[in-house]
Length: 280
Image (cartoon, rainbow, N blue to C red; front, side):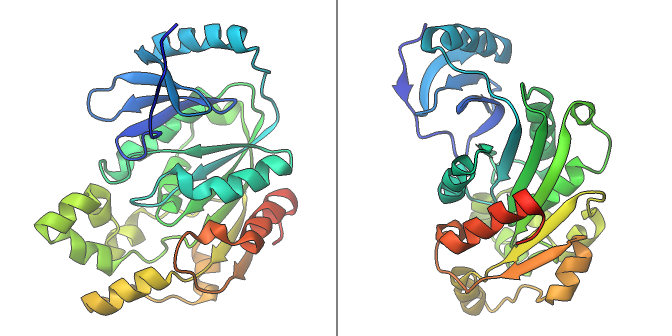
């Protein structure tokens, strides 16, 4: 066993590659070393992925962790964010009997294809789950679309439930492109920001078929302020365009917000309703 130390959960430099009963294995995006974190984000072991898996088995026995089973909601944050934005929604999902995994990925450190490979690895190693649904925030809808663009091994074992996209990136962001052209801001935003150029998003976007998709819209006042100060406007799109673009079967709008969109209890309830019933 490994004498644990508290971590901050690896929001920007670690990628989640395994999840089971709130425990996770994370991989450092630079040196590829792995670590096993418990449900309190305490590091219990460090080593290769296989070594962390073996260590986790010992902890299952030591802590008598129950087996997980059933329907899991996988939550994907947007550019520059972390899994912590999903805390209110995560609690709501557990209350309704779902399993829930809010996934960290180093959104400001890698390109889109790198994040897609992480998600593919994560889902390939998902255990004791028969159905998965997704909640995406911001640009992570692009990651999911690229993930579903071709057949994957895990699709043979996992049934796809429903997908909810919160403020999806459907028309790209000229604001992020302008930031990327600045050496300092471009370094902070990372390579993915430049890939969200409107023309590039139009090329790589690949709406997911045969899955019920719901879209939640809630304007960010913070982004609106940044647009005003920078003199750069994101491409405005109509609700009808969003529904058609994302192949959505339902759409709901909420009032503009300043901070974390998921701190709106009504919004979280609407997301859960769609995942359960296919309607907001």
